[in-house]
Length: 215
Ligand code: AP5
Ligand code: MG
Image 1 (cartoon, rainbow, N blue to C red):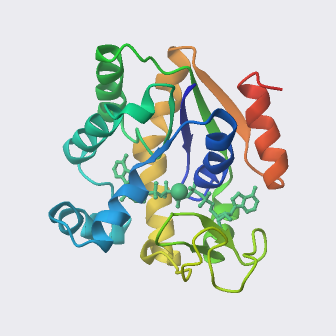
Image 2 (cartoon, helix red, strand yellow; image 1 turned 30 degrees about the horizontal axis):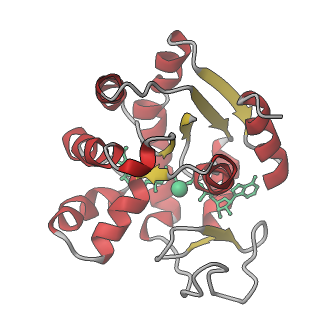
């Protein structure tokens, strides 16, 4: 299964990717998580992308495309993968088509997880994340078992620096202007399914499974 999760920041892509990974036994490639790891490790790439991410802007296409190209060649992608947060612009989507053609691994499905902006702003204000594994939690909707600690890694949960109200608004603007056009791009390829992202975690999961034809 080769799958793209499209959707606005905070639509629940990362949350749903966790279950889908286990269901299909394939990795998730989250460009946002990879960048945050580089920032935490203070690598050269991390230093280059930090200002873009902290301000809610997109990282330049060429940096993201090179990163994904290398990642897709790894052995664990042979049975498929979930792309979470990539592609995010038309040039990224075009570059992805070329990369996957070269590897003979075309995308099977593109799921657009649809959530209104006001609901997203509410979700982001209550989110915490694990800096180690990238899992996300919510103070009301997905509460960790031990307060402030990741259920999987035991690491201390943090708030993302780009989750302030102003930056979330900026990220939503960027999403509408630069990423939303991908809906038409993938509809034209006949690969797009819309899923209502509002509801319980299980309801959204079941809608995605139905769109993928696995229930
Ligand atoms: P990235 O990390 O990809 O962030 P994002 O797309 O903005 O999305 P989020 O991770 O914020 O949200 P999500 O959809 O994963 O939601 P989640 O499941 O956590 O990118 C960060 C930055 O990196 C970008 O701004 C950009 O600068 C850069 N970048 C990354 N990729 C790039 C690319 N390809 N090109 C250029 N730049 C790039 O859920 C959110 C919250 O809601 C959580 O608290 C969760 O518990 C809760 N929640 C989830 N589902 C539900 C539900 N059904 N009901 C109630 N609450 C829910
Ligand atoms: Mg995410």
